[in-house]
Amino acid sequence: MKSRFIFAQKAIHRLNVLCRVMRVNRSTYYARVAGWDVPKSKDDALVGEIHRVHANSKGRYGVRRVWHELRHTGVGRHRITRLMRELDLEVVGPSTSRVFDVLQINSVKWFVPD
Image 1 (cartoon, rainbow, N blue to C red):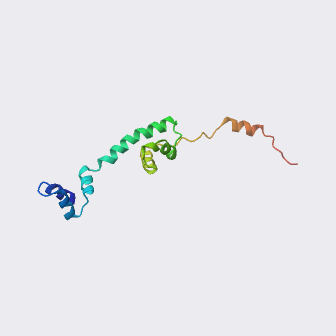
Image 2: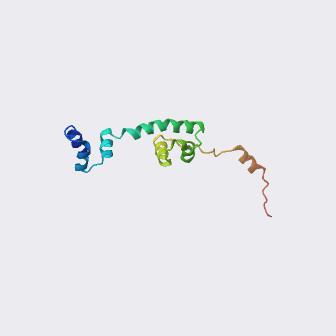
Image 3: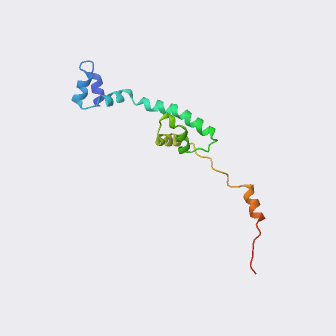
């Protein structure tokens, strides 16, 4: 509400005076007028990198490993967690049935007391 008033009156008065009188920081005013588009564009650029790292690992990398791979971008782990959750990217775990486990179980001689 205050930002709309400032926007309407800035042709008549100086912006810093309006912000001081309305007790609004200039950064807050500019952020409200911009509509907070900047973080979403950063997230859109980061989504491609997350998909690339996750695909290169064949789905084996979780949040911490993806964050470690992207640490040069300066992005936080919680942002990567949120984006991976929104993208439904999950870690592919190891398979539960393995042939060598069955072979080891069959080759064991069981001792049964008399």
